[in-house]
Image 1 (cartoon, rainbow, N blue to C red):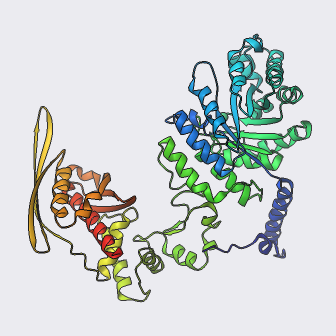
Image 2: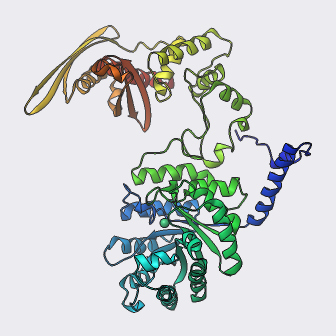
Image 3: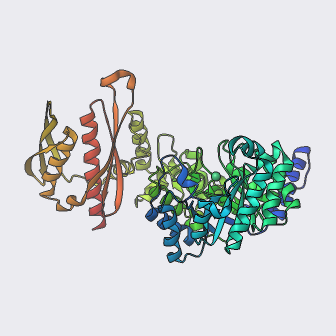
Length: 558
Ligand SMILES: [Zn+2]
């Protein structure tokens, strides 16, 4: 269902009656003025494949880059900065050949530096590599902070300006479209505004089609970015862009304030992956451009959640469940009063309709939950539950008991589903575990384990033994073998995750432990939880729930 949201028009209809009311109106008037300025189309420049690849722990192969580029183009970004072609890494040149053959609708950009000091462009191998990339555009980065010029490059201000103009002219001669990235522009401007301005006006004169102001250390404040961008906008006729880093957690805010100051291109990476603390997160920037500033990016935002997940997956990074707009928990309601309110008025606790971002609302059930969440969750499970029924009260009580004993049902939906099913009188008697044993032997060559399991299925006892690399693994193998006599479909079930957490660690090896197990079959995943002072007993409980849940769902479908 598409949620209804209160329109700004309605809010601004208030007539100021007090000082506070006047302030509220002033705030909205300010917004309206700023919004008026930025109602232009902003070009989105993605650098996940270049700056994102510089994040610690991320290392995209050529194949990974091609896959992500296809998704970015399908999403509709204007530019894809694909890499830094150079003579020392052949894969950085290969990606441009591959992407040319893909004929993507986004412009492909090659990134590189201005020529080295005191070297001609013709002899500069990296500039020649940029030319040979045959990319749609070249982003050439030059220093805009005198400190860097004198101390890091160890050259002069004049030579640095020549490096900028020569490099752009050299690439333009070859027919390249050039974007100039003014590195450390905001730091450089605050240190020596005349020099910083000379770098961007030199680039503009040399033929750069866009000038990108970079907050390379992520040190700037949004008001500084706004004012400096607005100043440069008045002096430079070429369109401006913003490249923000997140070292102070301000990259999204700085990108938005640059747009309010007149920038027409925003740079960043999907999920904010990048050097140190990362780049501006395009997920946040794009969503705020659309929903907060009313800028039309022309992008299909309903693909944003899947794009974010995809990049996490290819980058081999854990998803951030709390990520604004696209996180699994971004629209999850846990407190009872919240769940109750959003079931009637989604805008009560949601700033935007999650379906616009391809995300979904979820109602979380826990001991802090009210009846509204309990009823809403029953619907998710395909069960009918009346708000005033004894079963609803019983389920709430059972959840509180379980969480009091150390269970965490928020991450174990299959166990929670079984709590509901049992309370509603569902028969879940697929098998009866009589007993099981495990024998662990350890010697200098390692440890091994044997387990014997006795189960009764439909009155027939089965005794099965199996080996494993530990007691849980041996028990699981033996149990599954025994159950497959009656339920061969269990062969498709795999364990894909097993986590143990101490609940009262101060008791050392006698601590109560919580075991989470994740299962997978036929492309579906489910999680269960078990709790005990004995790790084997907690594992047994979570394992049994996992197999019972599978059989229950299989039976419900028949
Ligand atoms: Zn950067």
